[in-house]
Structures are given as structure tokens and as C-alpha cells.
Image (tube, rainbow over all chains, first blue to last red; front, side, top):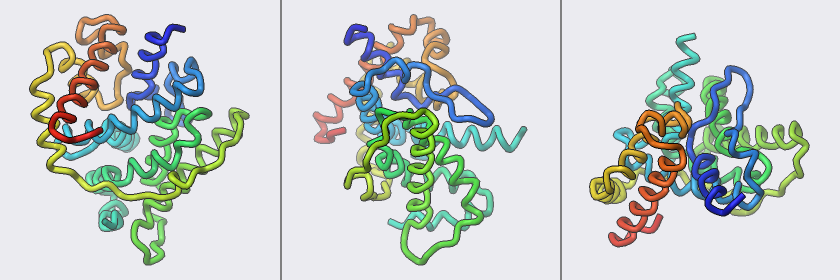
Length: 78
Length: 178
């Protein structure tokens, strides 16, 4: 894997998207392709992104918080 | 700041109050998982932990000290990460002092104003990629977002990276380091 390819995988893993699953914890598929150092980079990137996202959100919520709320609402309507 | 001010509303089932609690608690819970970052997908563990905190909140009994629900949340998240380490048979990790300390986050109106100004200065394509991620809020993967913008996945990711870097540069010029 080139460093450019790794950078793009890190960018994906740093997002709040995780595959939906009703009863088990699902990893981002790209996480499995990352070496250890790149996983830490993805962690640090997500940590630096979330305050920016929250600052741009009308209620001050990051995409992580929005994703969790969406799952709560979905669970209530099932 | 004591995030337990939201507890009564959370127990009453108010998701908006839980959102405000998460806004203050998320970074501390995430940081508590840093030493697991090489062996578990922290974002997945964090989201699951936050869901479990919502579920157990009605049974939570405060101990009289501030941020009781946040302290519980950190335990829930770390226990979940440890379970994942056992399930996947990854190498166990030791917590660092940094992870054990926590500080709830308060809204920063200066950052908000600055970042809104910086976002308005983004070129169209990077801004489209940034906005798509924000509007999706984790509901769609980047391949779907790229398709919705008629971009290839790599182009979408490159535009998102550029948006992130341009925002950081703009904020730095305003004296804000992210």
C-alpha cells in the first residue's frame, strides 16, 4: 500500500460512518486494512475533526453524536 | 462543568438532552480509549458505548460527585474495548495517565464563529465534500457520499482532506490551532 492509499483509508476510518448492525459491534471495513500506526493516526484525526464538526452543527453535535442519536431514534421506531 | 445537569432529562427519555451530554462528554470518552486504537476500532466502540450509556442512564445512581454519568461512561467504554480485545484476541494494552484524566468540553462560540467564516472561504468541491460528510452524520459511507456528488471515491476523499487542511490553515491564521 502506498502512503497516499493509506492516507485515504485513514480519512475513511476517521469518519463517523460505521456499518449498521442491530446487535453487534461493526468495524469500518477499512480499519482492518490499516497498520497499527495508521490506526492511531485515524484515532487522532477523528479526535481533531469532531470539535470542528460540532462547531458547524446548529446544536453543537459532532457526527459521532448525530450517528448515535440517529441509532436511538431508529431503535425506538422499530 | 458538571454534565450531570442533563441527567434528569436523559432519564426522562429526552434525546436532545442526551445530545447535549454527548457534546460535552464525547471527547473524554474517546480519549479514554486511545491506548486501544491499534487493536479495536475506537469509533465503533465509542458509538456502542454511548448507546449503552443511554440505556443504563435510568438505573444510574449519582454518588454526589460531579460528572458521575461521564465517569460511568468511561468505564462502560473501556470495558467494552477490553471485551473487544478478548474477542479478537488482540494484544492487551495499558492505559496511560492521559486517558484517565478527563475534562468535559464546553461550547466555544469563538471557534464556532471562526470556523463558519473559514468554511465560507472553501473552494466549491472541498466544501461539497465537507458538507456531505456533515449532513450524512455517519449514516452513509464515503462511497455513497461520493456517488451522490458524482465524484469517484478517491476524488471525494481528496476533496475532504483538502477541506480539512484549508479549514485548519484558515483557523491557524485566526490564532486557533486544531
